[in-house]
Image (cartoon, rainbow, N blue to C red; front, side):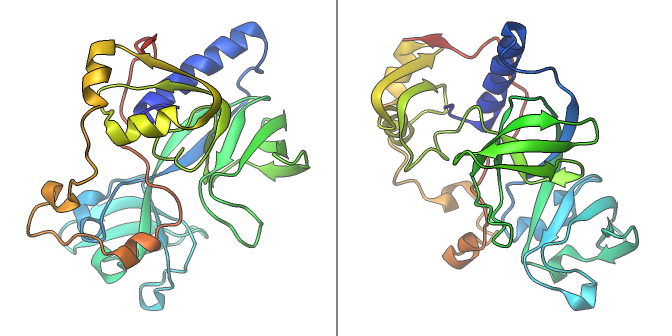
Length: 275
């Protein structure tokens, strides 16, 4: 596991490269568009500055007046400041202009291109009750075609065929963040703990293992110091301008998957040393 999503992605890149060199992971044969949630409050998502071409808007409820259907994906193709609207491409290719403040119950995503190979460990990042899919449910790619058709095996050993083309609520499952690892256990745990570590994250990391845990860090002294600092009593309002409403508990419950950390560039060569 890793402390942040950026560290998770860097570790994943390093692990996949090493496994491919060893022949334990196939060559990349398809590039998937993975949807990554933008970390926006309801208030932030009502402003145009939160949107950029290429983003994907998914309503949590129907907004018939705006022409938006619950669960459908609408790609942002432009932002119109004069009209206070975002211009969206619908699933059937038509174009809509919508004021984001008029549809408050929605999720906004960015897309990230990730290579996929036979042997990759992936996971679903959104619930789909009709398909029997749970957020966080993992699977392994056992067959993959150039068009994105994939044969996958789930944790119970059952196989099925899915198509990974288009925008997908799917991500790598090689590494988890400490945040998403809460409540889970494993026989052995390898954890990368950096400068974002605190007492709570440190406890999560060392308490997930049934038999053994190994910690990696760039500075053992800094890790010892950070692991003694608690952020449990910090209030989210300390980090939000007073003029900006804080999301309510009810709005938090509308979230259909766990909150990701911001995506940034991390050098995969600087992922820490074993301690």
